[in-house]
View (cartoon, rainbow, N blue to C red):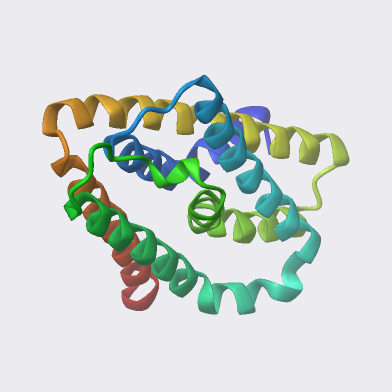
Length: 188
């Protein structure tokens, strides 16, 4: 696996992270530099950690993970998306992003990183040298954190256009991502 392939793999793993962070950015609320760092670094860390965990588990667990990963991702995204829609419909002075709270942040990180677990398992089958594995885990972390920051900023711009209804749209987007993941595994 070349270094270019490692970077492309890292970008491929965080497509869901981009969609989720854009949705949360669109949900409104003020996210300062500390909040950005918390979200970006946590999502990057979870993505890299699940990739490493997949590598550690190796090919013994591939069939177990593949049989339920789509249900886990669907359930988490459905829960978070529905919660965002309910909160957007509630009257309040200020809408805030659930990613500022530890629980929803971890759930979002896991939901967007389940595919990283399977990729980690496939990395174990490739028998990569230690340096390539280290570079892969570091690239997954860095790229995911960068994409999360980009998503939050892009979502914020989206929120300025739509106002409070952006929270409803964001929740629908998360649910749609969950449905897409589920259908990809059940239909194809």
